[in-house]
Image (cartoon, rainbow, N blue to C red; front, side, top):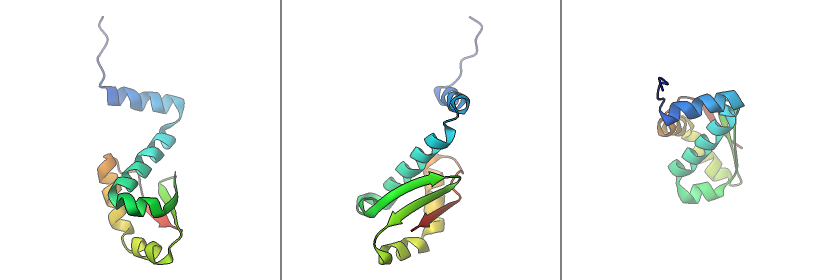
Length: 95
């Protein structure tokens, strides 16, 4: 026996690193957290969401909504990082 027991979360992080899918997993976490934080209505109006190299790119057709969300970028970034428990999101960019 003699093997050290590793918590599941730590084991999964190791597996993600070895498979080089850490960025993809982080992207799913960020997009999921964004949807939960902004709510169902804004989530439905967000047409496309993509996480890439520390930024979440969100396409929104409504110029007024895009402008309103742009004012809350910093707050959204902090809330998303807090929700996922990691400081990986640097900015939210609305297009």
